Amino acid sequence: MKKNIPPKINNLKNLNLIINSDTYKLAHEDIDFLSRNEMRGVRMLLEITKPDLILEENKILSTIIIFGGASISEELNTKKRIENIEELIKKNPESMLLKRNLKRLENLLLMSNYYQSAREFSKIASISNQNKKCNSHVIVTGGGPGIMEAANRGAFEANCKSIGLNISLPNEQIPNAFITPGLCFKFNYFALRKIHFVMRSVAAVFFPGGFGTLDELFELLTLCQTGMKTKIPIILFGKEYWNKVINFDYLADLGLIEDKHLNLFQYADTASEAWKIIKSSKEPA
Image (cartoon, rainbow, N blue to C red):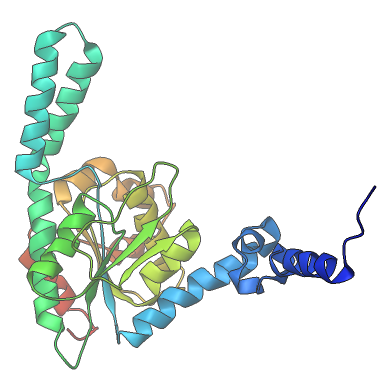
């Protein structure tokens, strides 16, 4: 015979279901709700607002963007990688892939000086503009390894603040260890990350890099070309590299850009030279 369950017990069970249901969560605490496609606009607004408020609270007045290859590391680290792959080649001397990777590492070794230059530039720029009353020309990077690490490291070694704007990728990367705690942000949207790179920037230094570096370079050049961003010093670090990678003069000769657009950027080959360009710009250092 079926027992009758008192209504009070039934009600308590139902109340427990109500309180623990997703619909009863506060909207801003419901992660599944916020992750829905329909909430993309809200997530984008949060990614705009959160870093902006925190940078304001930290009195970050202006920034210097530093971009460059994630694969360019210190000379010692690259040499160790070369030694490791040479050992693998000894065991498998016919491997064309290993030989290809060795050649690539040897080329990266030739560029390891850019790691040191980014580190040195960041140190100079940070010391020159950060004090108890002012946080201007704060170094901002993509927060990852390579040139980004070098730039954050330079500021860290100068006991100065620096910012990292990391991005959520399928192959997850962690931030480098030299970013100022509390000033490292993780983004889901590349477009919003770019906004935060540009909005406080008073200069940008582009070291040798790949698709990401080129993407950011042309984004900034376009913004300055069209007047959407006030003209700032845009420095291509390593003239030989950039002249081989991009023929800007050819674009002008074809009439695809105006001759005056070649003045949107300058070249530098040393940290002191790059800093001199920024100091001599209209934006006071």
